[in-house]
Image (cartoon, rainbow, N blue to C red; front, top):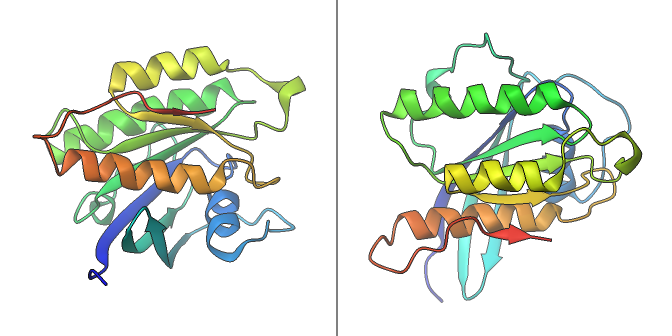
Length: 184
C-alpha cells in the first residue's frame, strides 16, 4: 500500500453560501440543521481517489467579503482552494472574484489549484447565476467548476475529488493538463 499523500485545502467564499454545509456533508455525511456563522473549523478526512489515498486537512473559513484581509494562514501551505458562491446570489460570485485575486496576489502567482463551486443548485427557481456564466469564469481562470447542493448532498463528493485532481495536475506539469474540468 502506497503512503498517504498529505493535502491541505481551504474552502472560501461569501457569508452564508454553504461552505460549512458542503464541508460537513462531505466529512460527516449530514447537513447541519441550522445556520451558525463559522469562525473557522478544520476537518481531517482520508480521501481515496483511484489507487491513491490522501490524508486531507480541510479548512472551513469564516465568511469573507470584498473587504476582508486574506489571512496569512489561508495562503501558507495550502495546496488548493475551493471557492464557493451561491447560485442564488450574484454578489457572492463577485466576492469570489475578489477572493481569487487576493489569493493569487498573496501567493505571487497567476495559477493555483482551484475549484469554482456553485452551491445551492437545488434552489433552481431562485437562480441568479447561470452554469454557463460560471463555467466561462472557470475557463478564464483555468480551474475546475462544479455545481452542487450541500443540503441534498448532490455533487458534494465530486467537489473534493475535483480539488485533488487539480492539485495533482499542478504538481505534474509535464503531463498533459486538461483545464476547465466540469462535473455535471
